[in-house]
Image 1 (cartoon, helix red, strand yellow):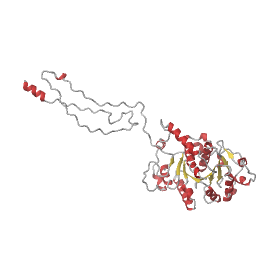
Image 2: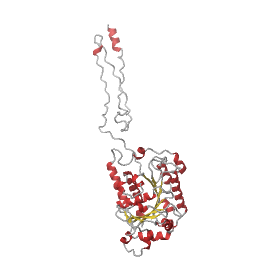
Image 3: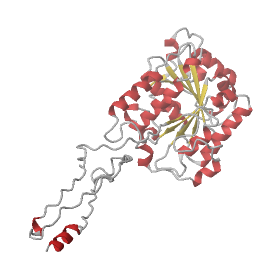
Image 4: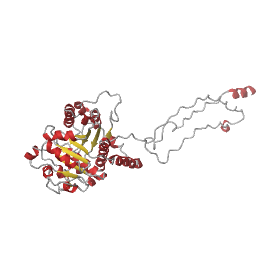
Length: 405
């Protein structure tokens, strides 16, 4: 019996099954999609020597044997209100250099003809990074808006002249002119006017309530102008305070609008207005265009998110560079205007990467039903996304106003 007891005491007990806690390395189902998994390296600790199980006495029932309790690491409870991880924001304005999502080591932008083969991101992917998207960012959105307002209201010494160009019609050039001018007039306290220099029956005057039949020719012919109210008699003003000076309605007379006449109009307006926008025609060779480019502080080039519009914009910049207006090209702002509903196959990020090698900034103006109507523009009826885009465009333009003396 003694030998049997000794043999029983020396025989090891069956190995205990190892228990792996669920939840140490993987998040629970409620927070897996919203909480990043954080893993930390375990410290290097030598394993403790195994404790031999107690000996079993031959007269003691095995059912009463008490095995040592196994301790398991505590699993932290899931957070009460799981929040999604921060999403990198996608700016509506592209700063110089490769836009977000593209490698910094790219040597040259994509060619215009290759843009059609690139995939456009989904709407949610493109806009989910905007301030205020989802449950986050309300305070951040307010802060960003205040910063934009501060930029838009930068002081101007004298006047600042902006030319809005496009070689292709129907891409939203006049809409951009009115939207930008209305935004400046609403957010700033000074006087803002838009001049229609389109020789082909420009429609700028149709975007504000008509208050007079005067045109640029009538302003030039008026020899009694001594004060602002004398000029105001020749303009129409929208409720947002934007004033518009209409072009000639006779195509024959409008075509003969010369560079000298445009300079006379600017000489009058510069004395009474702080911001002057010129809605140009689609040609670069008509007479008044030389005066427009010579007197402009900056240009806005409007294009559509399509290959033909991109080619026209590229040709416009090349023409300006070749004819002595390189300073306007480097300071230009490109606006990608979606004047039709639906999305294009061309990714605007790729389009921006191409033009940022030539221009100062690129903005995207989303499609808006009210702006696309072609009638009187009321900013209160413009969508939130379009108004945000116009405010950001105004801030970018205003950033350049401080350097003008």
